[in-house]
Image (cartoon, rainbow, N blue to C red):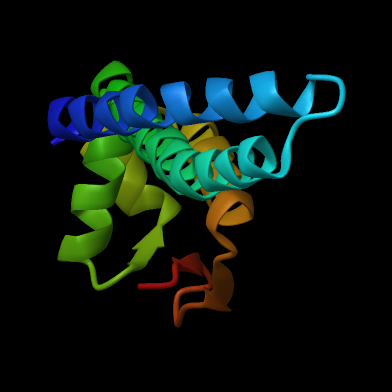
Length: 136
């Protein structure tokens, strides 16, 4: 997907560049004729939309790549999301500590950081434990 987005984004930019160069060259001429001014506006109309589309596609491809890299770099994060789905987006420190194989303090720090990141709510369970409730 990201390769396709990059190819399409690059293609859009390749289409846009000649029109944008034409536009800029004509606008920087001293006393361009009316025909040249029309050509410059045409260059703007034909160059700007594909340039914006190309830039957007490249930015989206870059975000997809960075998200994929982030998920690959952090297996705990991936495990966290899998456990969240399995627990219907409700998780306790003990559940996360067992699943991740980390201490209770590390589990609490991790869950606190994710709750700030995703805007989780909290609930107190029957046994007095804190239940983190993440948005689905």
